[in-house]
Length: 550
Image (tube, rainbow, N blue to C red; front, side, top):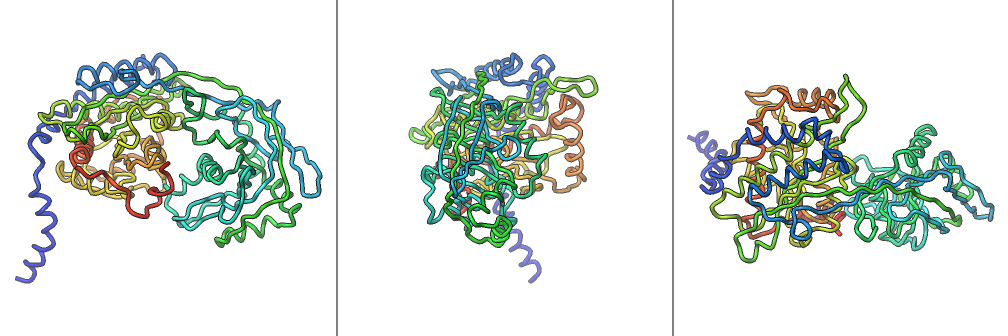
């Protein structure tokens, strides 16, 4: 009897969950999600005639037109600019003009040292100004973090207003991969610096060699950096350059930093050892740096495609849950086995296809959810999350009314879907929503199966997070069940063979029924959020609660 009682206690959570039935309206909507329609979208979007959907090219505009046509057929209301489905996004490639770039370091004794580009320093091209002059004193700010939640406050008790800060790159090993990657983005370090009044950032990677340093330098002039820019020319989004108050951003070599610290009566090796112990090493320097550099701009226009299902509640319909998916891929590139078109069938025609069918499911509801649900097919994810960065910088909806973001990027529907990993949901109340949604369609929920990849901050949901909006990205889970035994290995093999290659095209690798279930669970996540009068919230004290939102 005791054993039976204990068993019943253990089953109580499962029994109570099973007793909570999904309402018939939502159940009917997800039942109508059609894997054949998902397949048809992928077949069109990954066709050779779209030539890899590269922003600025005809193939991408064909994809834009296709999505608009689907929105109209489904009955989505326009939610872009000027009563349309479109939001124009200016994408800028900035390249450094090496012949018009020079820096001079002034040491404490007054000696002036001209610096050699590619040996002593590199500088990012500016995303907003074609020509920049600067002259500022230096300050050393350790690892350059201003993050009390992880107990690193390198700017504490240090006045860096009007100065260029020098940073020794180091990220604590005890942080999650998502936090590490967020902190390592150059723009994140520049945001910390700008917040404290600095006008420039120079980063030294203590472990990089001369060859790697020269390669980064050459890349600044050959490939440059990507950004999306607002109508007034200000930077909207870029992982590399913040613009604005930051007039100079780049790197300096280990050799130069050693020389600089020696002139300041400091020892770089000793500083590094102190940093490894977590010690505070920031200090004002007596040296200064001046310079001039010029950038060449190449601008193209692209588009986000945005539609909405209006909510049914008179008040809550003015709040929004957003489904996003990136519409672009990498275009035409180096031929592999005679094929030069990078079709992007899995990445991310499949994600767009699922999002379109989620929208169709919403259109079939007899009673729409309380909140409005928005569908944003975004440009330039492959160029550095630039379309989502533009949208969150200049949203076509009130930013403070966006309650959650659900991103659909490369579902990788290679096997029957039995488990999902909601990337980033653990940082907010969204995790409970996912668990409830998954229970209605018989899916397991598991933590990120590849935590070292930092995938939460590598796709479009990241820009929503940076804007302070709880967001997630549903990925396949790898838990082994009776249907698929080695999914993790299968995905690894597939990625090595096909990721960002022409072979990512429509073929027999797709399990279309899994796409249907993927769309169902994503629909239910947004539906539950849209129905709940309470907005999703960050977990109290979570790193992303206080270190990203502006």
